[in-house]
Image 1 (cartoon, helix red, strand yellow):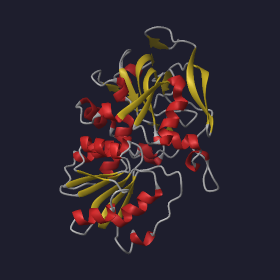
Image 2 (cartoon, one colour):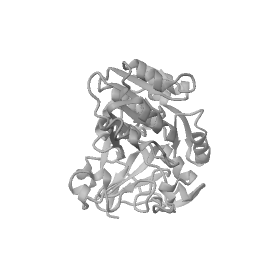
Image 3 (tube, rainbow, N blue to C red):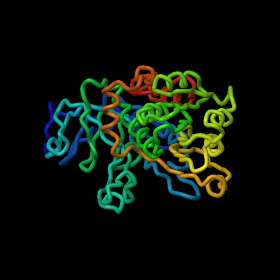
Image 4 (spheres, rainbow, N blue to C red):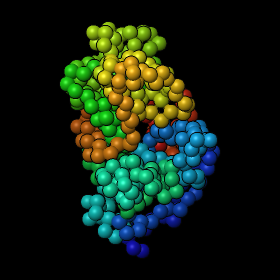
Length: 366
């Protein structure tokens, strides 16, 4: 058999399979078995991410256009926000990861090659050769299934039993949020704006709160989300449909504008909003996966304001911090996790995320 397990693994399982844009199906699929250094989990909870939705809807980043090749490789099992119970360990995996059968475990969303220029420099989240993120690539099938395999070069972590599995599925998005906040290089006393307080934006608010900014402002069109942002640590919340947020932020900063602006809406208008709202020499963090192209006055970045423009990708080195934040109860998770569906109701979950008005974080339970 080549691996250890508490009981024999079944031969087949139920899995959501991406066959193409808006062509996701519940299918019978083979249960993965671990090779040397690999781990198999029984999935306990998996989140539906905004990038999952954009892949489902056919965004060019995932399916390609005249400028680039698509990132998604169907048929593939989606799902990169997850946690599961360790049910099988390949040879050496227990020592390599400190995992035992029955542990709750999570794996970083990217499985690096460890050979390219970026991986060798410790910048593994920008892996050039494979950039295999769970749920999109043939080598790294995701967690919208009953079972899932972590390859032998993955980055895996044990999850404390004190964190409920449905909350632990939030480790991945929270890690991404933490990295985005780190990219903002927030200083004591800064005026910080988080634009968009969906699940990731709420995580950014909680992480930015730990940086002790002078004023932490959350912006969103949804008042329910703004109230949860307050519970995450926002000092002030603003709704652009009710107030001129650019003018208001300038007033709150003696006419200068915010020091740090983090864009997490995924809407092109929020990029332009941020460029007008931020002060000269400020730091703009772009986090979102945009479905549509963004057109802005590029001169603002250079000649007008000399801005620091920082991208943010994945959650490198942030998983232990995310686990610690959840274990300490620093986020109102019972308010953030709004909907839970069984795996067979995945389409209902996707549609709810697409609607965007009645949910925050939607999860599936295989």
